Amino acid sequence: MGLLLLDATVAEGLVPWTRLERALASDALVVSLSPFRAGLGEKATLLIPGPAPLEESIELEGPADAPFATLAFAPALLSPPKDLALPEEILRDAATAAGLSLPAPAAGARAAALLAAKRGRLYDPAAASFVPTGDVADANALGELFARGACWVDDAAPEAKGRFAFLRSGEAPRLLEAALGTPSALPTSLASLPRVAVCAAPPSLLLTKLTRETALFNAPAAATCARA
Image (cartoon, rainbow, N blue to C red; front, side, top):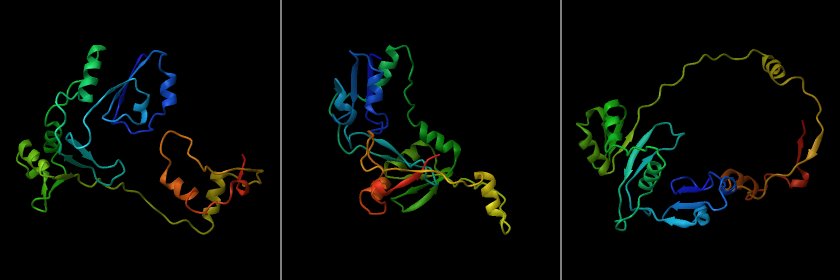
């Protein structure tokens, strides 16, 4: 690969540099589309500054494991420098030069989709109340709500229906034996617990709490595990 474009919107540590480096040619050009020369951007041979924080309007979506889908917009609070190259425009131009097509997102497409679905409701902070999405007049009215800090909240997903029954006395051991097989003695060997992060991504907060800030685990030499 002779050209690598690093997008600043990708979470740091998602792809280790060692994996990317193996796919690069010796004279490859690495371009970082970011306002900062940090993270993977330190490996770049060319830095194209994009909008810094607070210099562009961005969509705010809820986490993937949230019980409800949400959508809001953070407006730009600072004026970006003149003639700033937006990363999405550079990626679109690069795709066009390579014979590909990346159509620009249509203005107001998200608002139109929400109005068409008529799902959920919007919290209007100015009125401190919720407005059903179906009661919003049009995309312009929805845009005004978002501009003053409104947040769209989707309807609750229907819960899956299931049938449950209590196990009879003595049923649990029989089911466990059928699933796991007859227990047998296994040889043990010494094992150590991770104390230092060895990957490119930041260490897990849970891992940090368990292995660095507490005495929950014994010393590595005293820990044993079963060897299959």
